[in-house]
Length: 203
Image 1 (spheres, rainbow, N blue to C red):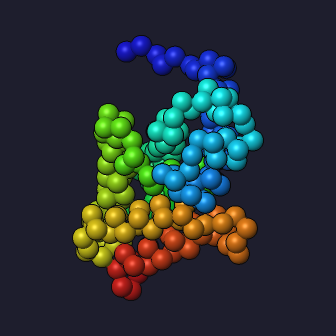
Image 2: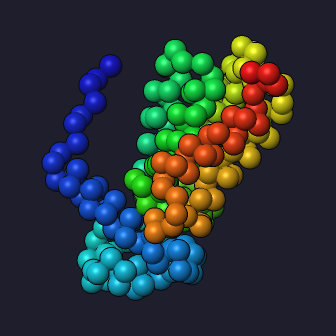
């Protein structure tokens, strides 16, 4: 099997600049939503000429797909690493929840583009849904393991995962870095809440 080719320095710089644009564009998305924000408003928010913005993102859909690829790639990477650890299921779930909150609020900086994936063209949408399904399965696997090990109570695993991911993803809509709670505190409070809801009584 051929070794993976290492990305060139130019490609890494291009990708880094696109991430910087995405983080800055979060303000425009917060004000108008992904659908309502125009490329002119995004360019103004990132202090860039519209023509230069099109060099990095030829359309809003291109920006949206990049957001999905970056955030889901990072989330899957962290989930895979957590799944390989030998810690109990409740600690694995905590690590995944904290990592999720950190990724969409700090690394992707609260971009609502993370939740607007259904605006993508069909081909790209299928790719994103496939990755989202993989990520959802990682949560189900951890909770199922916790039930099997007697850490978590018996529950509808699929519904539990939907509740967790729905709450985590929605933080991109309302979280403010200027607020009274930090990203790390929010991640741990969410973890406390959901783990407490899942653990066996008396644990």
